[in-house]
Structures are given as structure tokens and as C-alpha cells.
Length: 102
Image (tube, rainbow, N blue to C red; front, side):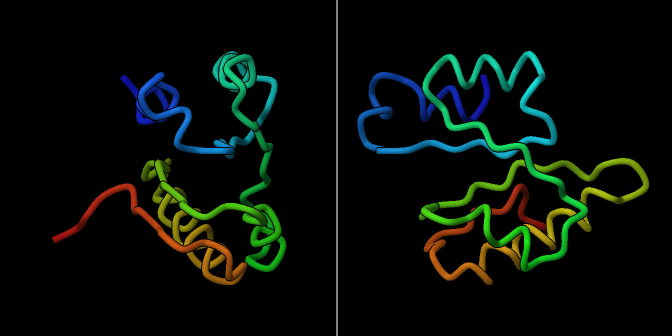
């Protein structure tokens, strides 16, 4: 079970007016499955600078980061950029990190 399954469950789905998933490609099987469930799927180029990434956070109140560590630690760079972009946008009220380090 994925975190999105919980948010898309009948018990929680009505609590949120919009659920958005960021992905590298909207053409993947999982992205299409999310779209079929009414999720807004947004293809994001994580190589963009923070100011450009911040534009994707328009209208997003809660950001749950589920990025992994990635190859050669690139995921950690992506995490930091997304966190900074969420803060830069000014709309995000809650940021939930993908893990809680020691």
C-alpha cells in the first residue's frame, strides 16, 4: 500500500479538494493510474532551479515528500530543492519529509 492509497480511500478522499502527484513523466503506468482516479498528475523536471520548481506548488497546502535517495545520492539533492521550492512558493503550510534522520 502506498501513501496515495490512503488519501484516495473513500474515508479520506472527500477531505481533500485536490490531490496532486509530481512525477518525472506523466506517461508512466502509475501516473496514468493516478490520473484515472482523479489525481492531478504534474510532470516536473527536477533539474529546474528552485524558483521554477516553486511554480508547481501553486495551490498546494500540504506537501508530502516521498522521494528516495536515488542513484549516487541525487535524490537527496532533489529533496532539498523540493523543500526549498515549497518554502519559496509561500503557499505550502505543511511539509512532511520522506524520512526522519537521527
